[in-house]
Amino acid sequence: MSFLKNLQEKAVSTAKIVGNKSQEMVEIGKLKLHITQLENEIKKMKFDMGDLVYDAYSKDTEFPAEEVAKLGGEISAKYTEIEETKAKIQEIQE
Image 1: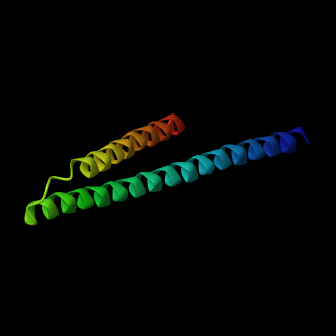
Image 2: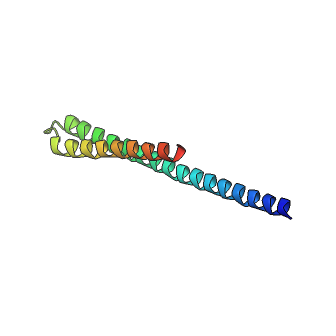
Image 3: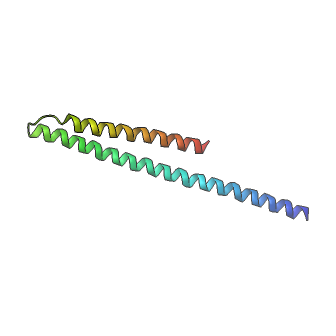
């Protein structure tokens, strides 16, 4: 009887470990997806910034400094969020 009970306890323990690892992998996957979304947002913002600059150049109008600065700040914030998310991934992996 004790052999079966010991085997059952080991099986339950193993199942819990596997469950925890699976949950960690799902969380890491979500965080990596979030990073990809942030990177795509950054690309779009950089594209928009380039459009602003080129439009000003091509139309020989004043450089849109405020708009460019605003987008630059938003891009910097996205990069910071990416680094924070990478740190969360690192914490989960350790």
